[in-house]
Image (cartoon, rainbow, N blue to C red; front, side):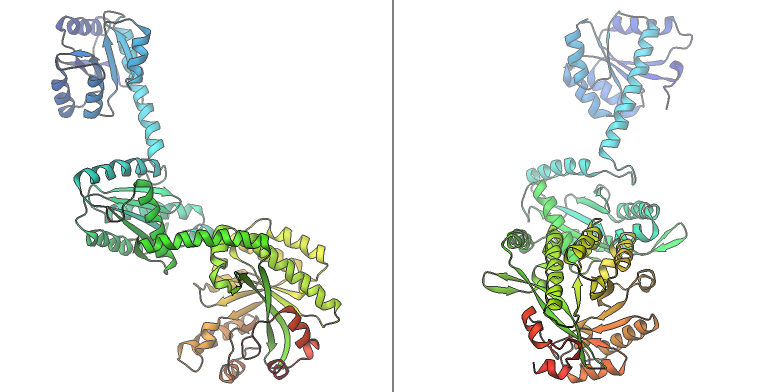
Length: 576
């Protein structure tokens, strides 16, 4: 926006010397047919009143007034109207004084009785432009360019002041963190254009759901925050969280397409949860991730127990890192069988941790390894050992044993994963056809394009591919069509329900029918009795594993028990 013409500008002159005021007015008029409108006041109090009552383009400010002087004048003017440009008028022609004045945040400095009307108007126009630039830069520094709401920098600064106010007044405030569930899936499947529109729409819904005066911000990515000042009690903060959960979970119509999204919310209360602003931010973040881990589309209040759990997880991550160096992880192998021919067909490699004399199951450490990044070296260790053991079995004269290896989402989404796996295949001289790569259903949804590229590369290398724990996540049948999947593994939780309730068998039948229609192999996990085995056979499940056949065993036991390879039967395995 360009500066207005002189005759369209309205100037506020704050000057107690009437002679100086008359001189300035005549100077501005001398060389201009239509001089700007000039409103003159003689003290700071009247200037503040004028700024609150009328819109001005510039303040021309004398620094020595009857009721204030120096930086106080500048500060009060800026508080009355933070957006108004200020040009200081002074009788001093001193460079040091000018620099000092400009450092107070004014836009220009003019010496009284110096210069003509054109020079003064030029200075005023420059001051207006400099102020506009300053405001624009401040906006960019403190507001999110996409949603046009405050950004993290602004919010953290505001939170600091709000906590100070709450401390002085003894009032309560609530800090709410929100994260859109599976936002990455929207970006991956519909594109960043839709992702951006979803963020804008979500920010608008948040603004409509909170009270007047509550501050909202986009903290980064798909994460938002709300500051609730002067909340009466915890129930008031909970009411806001419930409204946010309900409002944000309603379907979005974006460019003619319906997009469904939910939100996970974490809440911390001051002074109940104590702490400085940085600690409150950490508390809200912890509570938000607890809400996400609890199943999403809900909210959690921060508790000390959550903090203790975070500390425990951090310590466990450190122990995993140490255990990798100490070589404390090892593999057991779960035998798999052809249920129709009742013969041994291969194994699933399962990682275990020998920690302080006790064997730790993967459910206790895999998620921490994933979050901390230690899953990459741990996965590398598992693959190396599985390859090494496969070669050892072949050298011992055993028939080919097919090995299933679990691969984490973080590994699949690592751009270097396929190349590194290829190098290990060459180093060990193994045939990829003897290995099946298992990925979880949730892995497919995290980064669709990246996952598809990785799976197609693995298939091209000769590996077969399986979806582990199928049916436990948010299944999308389109993914089965798009990804080069060979095998669906029926999760043990569904198999366990066979003969117990109607839901497990119904889900098993649906998965088996789906796999058959898509030409995929099925492997049932967790088979423990004849009733489960008979049900699976009747409904077309060809392969399975579980304690009915064998518990996970060491490599030496595989060699001893299955030295006949594919000729070993179910009965021989159970009594081996």
